[in-house]
Image (cartoon, each protein chain N blue to C red):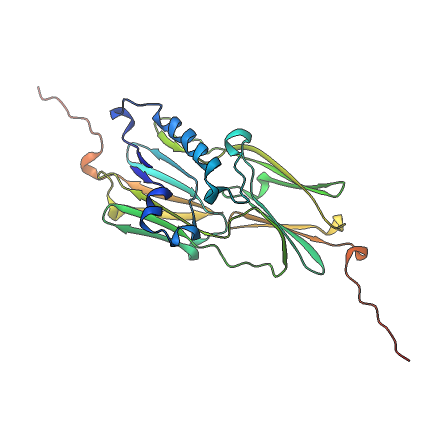
Length: 154
Length: 125
């Protein structure tokens, strides 16, 4: 597949780009290389940022891919054992004389929530944002941590 | 500007294809330049390569190494490097291309050569 994005004023196919975007999306839906464990619903549902979940003895870690946001555009909250991440990516107001001819990035509101597998200490949750990735550190409650029981042999 | 997609690359590099993922991009054009924005979460300045070969521009993003030493329970992100190739319009002055990356978004400014910028020609009396 080859896309020839000529200067718009020279093109008689002004809607070709939209059609190509649609074609890309359809390809994506059926291309197993691009769909393994991957969210493919962007075209229909807006933006679904990818979430990864990790666990060690003390904490759960949630990483969310949120490229191109500002720290204060991200909201992190907890409701009934589910972590909720939402926000809005605002489109940069561009000079109206600029011509956009390929638009794959999503702008607007997004929301994701994730049921956590272990209870966490809500007041100790920390979040940081670096290189377009949000990392939320959720310390487990004492009850949820693995315990080692001393066995005394007499 | 022509965008080569992965399918082109697949036929040429069958083996290495699986290691890459294509970043989502926006392309726009102003009077003086083209602007390319590419989303590469997890990539910073140190992991970014912008290569120019003739009129072919390749952007490669290596993700920063994993900073969490814990068991992975669930994954949606793709643990692959970013890569995408663009064929540049001949009007672009390749010597003046500049790049910056902020919070995982690469912004490439591709200025047009002076000779192709629109200019007004005064009509002589």
